[in-house]
Amino acid sequence: MSLYTELLQSSTSNTQQHFTRRSLLPSKKDALWRIETGFVMTYTYLEDGTTVALGLWGPGDTVGELLSTMKPYQIQCLTKVEATILPVDNLHQFTDTLLYHIQQAEELMVIRSHRKVEAMLIRLLAWLSKKFGSEVEKGRLIDMRLTHEDLAALINSTRVTITRVLGQLEQEGLIDRLSLHRIMVKQDDIDIWYYEI
Image: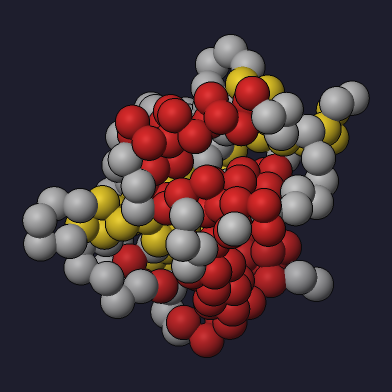
């Protein structure tokens, strides 16, 4: 039996809670949140108020202050979200969850390590399309409705820069921007070396 199935069965007494887009999931010192539907971003702030994205999470993912040493630690709903509280008696029961958080942190670290915003953004879009996207006729659809500000927070850039680079990527035929902030990545394995020159 998988960890997710065990947690699902053990939490049948827990009720799902509903949250609106851009609301924050309440911080819990002795519990985690399992995302049932929707998407959330975990983040912290620097001293100057700069937002630093810590991760992006969707259905089946578990998030919470117990999984981070960052202070402050916030969980913002990027869409409408349904989430279930998972009481935590022992973090050892969440080994798979901890490993998954580490893997995502490493992936985002590599994406943010590119020198140019263009390279970071195209890598981020490719990562999002693989993690949260769905196959469509002309590529992979990222149906998360991420704003330019959300994308900027994920790679430590600015909204203005993201808007400019998205326009550039669309002109080059690498992406299509659709209504409601949705993006379609046209190729599975985008060669980003062009952006590193």
